[in-house]
Image 1 (cartoon, rainbow, N blue to C red):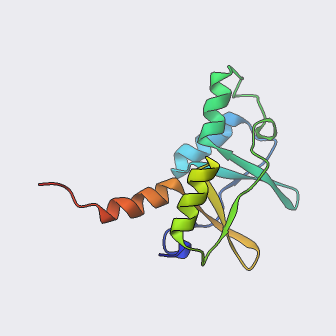
Image 2 (image 1 turned 90 degrees about the vertical axis):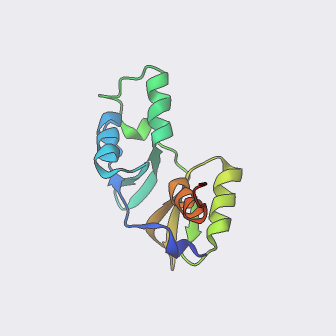
Length: 128
């Protein structure tokens, strides 16, 4: 199975000057686990649920702390036509849960561990 069959098209973004609480609200309202942090003419990184939990655990004021202080600057990408098993293995080995999906060098969406889990869940039949 290819990434194109399981990924979520479109890019949910947030500005680096937005706060962690704004990121959390955007994630909750959109049922998202990650947001790309979009600066001027560039993507600066990604902020995830884990980043938010980490900030809370460190007692950071999420109402005023800017995303730019808590994002992951490296974006891991995978091609739309790559194998979904490769996506799963990269996430497992890299200890992250989101890959930015690219096509012809352009970012077009995200594939997450949730997408992979849904795929696996579809293959598992409930026991009687």
